[in-house]
Image (cartoon, rainbow, N blue to C red; front, top):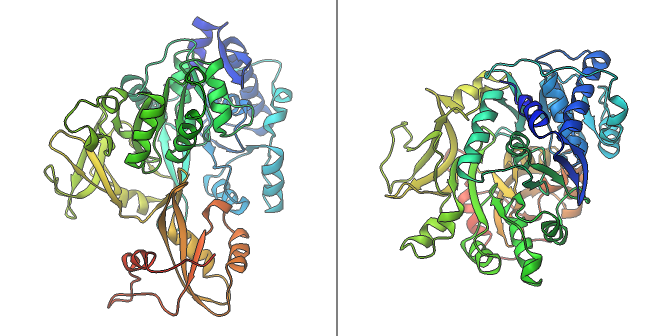
Length: 504
């Protein structure tokens, strides 16, 4: 089925209920949202020549029209390509070129950067979306469960972004998993998009559209802990997805306010490691309002879950161990921990986390080699290392792909290293992550070169990659530690971080 069918059904049965809000203000009912998205879908066909199966990008900050643009694309039978709004225009350009997008929804700021980068695609502005509503609208285009719906680009260890192909069937399965094991939804429930709609928060929109809830975009368009708690007074029981760094800020502010100001129903956290001390502080300040999920773009938000009732069960004898885990597998998936030969390991033994189920991606867009490496005999090899306990709870120990997760965003060392190595005076570079109290992890670059300064390398990085990916610290060294085969020993670099002060 087409996921846009959920919007049609909610418009039919709950047409007068609020569907979209900006801050405290309702901006569309389900009747209006369905009609408007269908009108924009007609314009996509007429003005942009869109046909079922085409791809259309979205490179913009959170905006109420973002949701309407998504459903307009799905009604027309298109696949959406949501792009992280924090990316550099050159990174976004690669994604648009690689996906073969016919156009890209954007905003004024991002449109200007794309034009400066040489992008020639049509760039309709989300703010102008009302002017693109045709006089007539089209009905939901029929799609099969295997048809592409969401093309999510995630960097790989090679530094080249890969397009994760998520089908309508994948999104249906992920939505049902959310409703069954994370958070049930009834008409009028609110989901607040303080995190990017292009990522995990956006993937939760389906449950709220399907069940006639309200998708709320904060007035700021982003995350502010004061605004989040203020919104909870307007939408009591509201739900939001948040990276651990966001949770920490919400908890710190909630501790300074009256308990009546905190009416959040559930904070679903994921996207990076949550320190045990931080979630315990969250429970102390805010009570049992937390659920955790573990997933990847390749199995979106849906590998394991640590439900609210488990997090709240402080009387359990292994409560702390469970709180430090990422929970148990979702009902709809199989999860194994496997050794290097692909053999499943018993509880207590460390190995690679592998998952199989209806939520797992179809593969990588136009990348059969990467698809073959990630999907073997129907199993997704995540690259994450973990261990099951005897009760079936999974604890992650490391990430074999060396991904750095800072503020909920994935940063891949190879991508940063390749940019540093284009500087004429950089001979070698190796990037690792370091624990950071505010961001979870930060980027540290070890650099071999001549007469270099952090400011100079910062400016160099900002010409090619997003600001959040650039190193926060630099260590200028005479050589990098290597093994007998010439491979840089990143373990040794991490150990060196504890031996002296970092350069500013």
